[in-house]
Length: 345
Image (cartoon, rainbow, N blue to C red; front, side, top):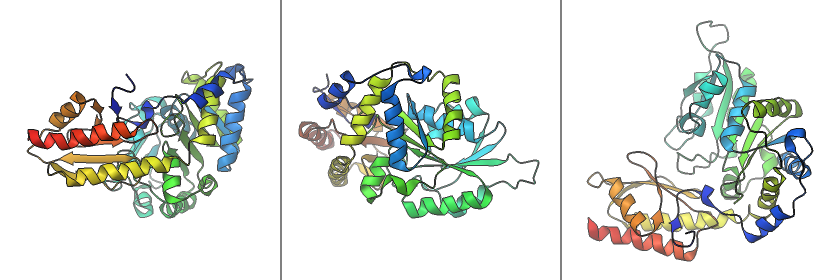
């Protein structure tokens, strides 16, 4: 099945490589809920050291690491600020409200960027008892719904200055942060101004499952309690942690290959008369929409019949994502299917 389709739906569809599977098989394990899985401990320590943070927490998903961060940073009845395209706002099942009793205010452009000025304008006055107190600012780098946009350190630092000015916590949803760092030639320690960071291991880095929450020791201890409350405590999770260690050691630099392939796909889309718009391609995500005379589902179904899988993001936008499991054959299948659709219009 894996080789019979070209799966561009997401970088979450990647399968562990032989080297990763070998590392998983050889992992030393314990019971992480009891605190004695050595491989999980090593992964958490390794990742926190890479980012210049004090501690880390291994979790099943990026949704969980984000939800834990929000829960620890905020009290019920408070408010956070983010882009209207944010993952926490669109794709976490209403968890902000359900898990933490927090509401959201949004601002920003159609690429997932929010300026420091916009953030400051949304901060509620502490003395106004009618308003929910602003307790958290969340940014997502890269922005998935923005088309893989890289926010850049200058913008992120400007927002950090606002968060410090008002004494508001600052969280980074870094599900695809390594894509941004490779694209912009950044280093993890340059992100040490965040109060908490979530990074995903199961997207471009190729691990089968897992995300990490990074912060100071006290925050992570509180987060560990919330993880248990959410049902995220895993027992012999060292096998999964070993995959994450392998991913961090071997699969970061190669992300540039995914970015180059995304550019090639963008160039093909630009040649097609039935494509109306493509969002700027900065990393491994290509968001595009077709002209109004065409039903996006018709293109979607045509691709699928040809063994090419992508995602309909909504009624207009379609998404293609490059990743380490995409081969030259898969790229050729996508290219031929996109061109052949022209004859059906």
